[in-house]
Amino acid sequence: MKTRLTVNGRTHEVEADPDTPLLWVLRDHLNLTGTKYGCGIARCGACTVHVDGRAVRSCRQELQAVAPTAKITTIEALENDARGKALQDAWIDHSVPQCGYCQSGFLMAATTLLARTPNPTDAEIDTAISNLCRCGTYPRMRAAIHAAARRLTASEAP
Image 1: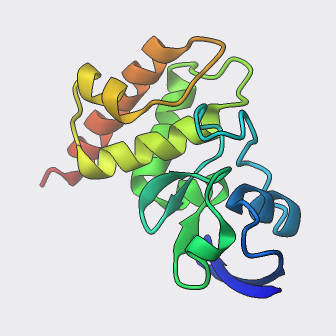
Image 2 (image 1 turned 90 degrees about the vertical axis):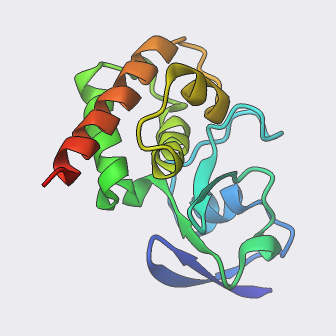
């Protein structure tokens, strides 16, 4: 079945079963491989993307639930978002990634967090971001999120 889908500001037409997980449409049909498969049960968060501005685990989100009206953003377009770019820069500055596999999901979740809570506490970060990282770089992630929040707040000051 042909379905229209808006991803990273572009409209695509894909041939996929309506109950295909969004993750596989992004990776296999649109070749957007920055979104990763981790657990397949929406627990680890490696597959996190934005759907209409909110963080969604794409491994359990069916195509029919988002097409044709939802606006989907993947890690490939995150640098075009001020929060996303600030987070990516902070991730590098704080040497967050080790293996890097889960990082796109963390960045997507953190971008949503900063949109809702511009200056989150450690507790708010821990509550909002339930993604899993086997490398255990959580303290560096928290530091990077705080740094990005400070950078964004400073750039908004008159």
